[in-house]
Length: 237
Ligand SMILES: [Zn+2]
Ligand SMILES: [Zn+2]
Image (tube, rainbow, N blue to C red; front, side, top):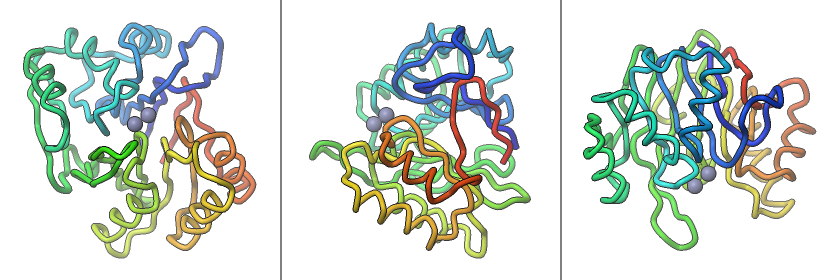
């Protein structure tokens, strides 16, 4: 399967917009998160030749502006599109999706939304002492599982462990996205990288809120299996 990076903090070339938050497009049809700003997301789609009309579903990892910001513009262009949230997202978010005439689906548990493309359903997490539920995307391919995360507020290891229990016997091929380690110290980061190795994660692509220190540590420990994520890049999983 192919994952195209539509929004993130760095890009393949300077014409592409960058900023806070992430947005990934899977197989040209499933949008995972929408970055901080709709206009920028659409600009990047234009440059990258992405046809917005081919997007069938949008999955939002969690209810934070840097992941939902671009959503509203998408919903204007694609009336009636399916939007997958967690039941625990805010009422404001859900109301706004419904007002945009989108089809809001609140998935509490693991759901296959397209062939071999799953959402984990709500995983409990916290952000600055407040409950922050989050879901991740799971792609099942011949290589194994690829997990795509937004911010990983529940904890990146907890997400990977949870996915592993839902897909017994499956190898985790790659984990890509925000790992939320930017406020973590060196030892905490090492524990996560060691945890990845223990869980048998073959490739790691930390970006966004993972933080520079964590990205460096993963790069060091993963070597050629470190996945650099930049806007415009297409990642084959
Ligand atoms: Zn974020
Ligand atoms: Zn967040």
